[in-house]
Length: 518
Image (tube, rainbow, N blue to C red):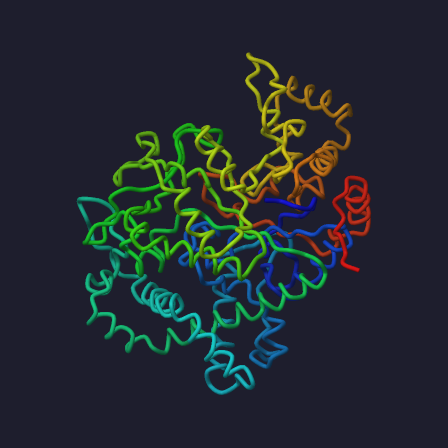
């Protein structure tokens, strides 16, 4: 439940400015916190922080608990003596306004591993005890993640094993370790001990830098809104370590996969390929895996947005061998029971439910019964059937909001507001202008004003909208893979006093300035 009107900006840390090809937890992040403060904002919304997998998507991580090494700041490693100035010479010619993952990933992977190696060789200094404590306290996920990531790298060039019955998990691996047979686990743990130690140090460095940044943000009155995808990647440490919680057979084959039916984003639906949950097994363990997942995330952020919340009421179950999402079916999930158990164990849950897409009365009731705020995207309120005409009762229009709502001008999956408006039919554009009682010379900021002035408890604006950027600067296009996705970065000069003053004035007018404690 939202109790205080607040405003924030949506910007993933990879999109921060800086000299190392990708945003990180260094100076660019601290400058952004200061910018948020000048704007009168109190929320910084980010995407999942895990190590990315296929397509560089933060929603396809190889772990629900590990952090992305690409976000570790080389500048901080230099300050701590884990890198030398020479290590930062010969930097590739990185573009300034986008992430070129083909350049960044190999360069920064080598850099971070070099720092971790020095840490292990004796340069840890006063941090050795903290590292040992970290490994002990986080062993319940860290040990499996470190071994999984090391195995994944070891077998990456191996030809996949084939299966006639459905997709095999970890199909490039030897069968015994893919199925976690005890003797294989013991053997590979010894064989890859050096690699697993490197990966544990990298996670220690990641979380130390993140917690330092979060502490600084808290001092400025900035709270983080994190993100959890409801499903996990098939090639993840989660599936490997907790296979019994997913619909996977004894040989490691998916028996069903997740996605969504045809909708706004795709005529054939979205075939995500994630394994769906074995809710019966999760229930027998009183949802302990989900409790740990939510609890751990809430140690890193202040609020958590759960992507595809409707999957807790019913999920789209697609045959394992399907090539599109069309032939799936809805199957009920025990969402209310699970969240009641989470509340019993964790207390109040600062959760935002992503309730976009195909939403039924049952999903609405689940969210309302749990008192989770839902999401509203302004663009969707004006995307109506031209034959049927404008619908003033549309629940995405701000005059229909309740206060326990988070309103967005757009999300990471939407076009920018400028790009969206330019792509709309002229009749829709006319309705937008009439609704706002404005012309369209400053249409993006008109949408920002509409969000901030609404009755929604939280109002969040993607950073690209502050600059009125077009379609080419959107963060992601669903159901596509390519170098344009997840690549947006802002430039240092974008954090301008003009923008911060304009936002602060709006936040003041609409009662969204942070309430400072006396």
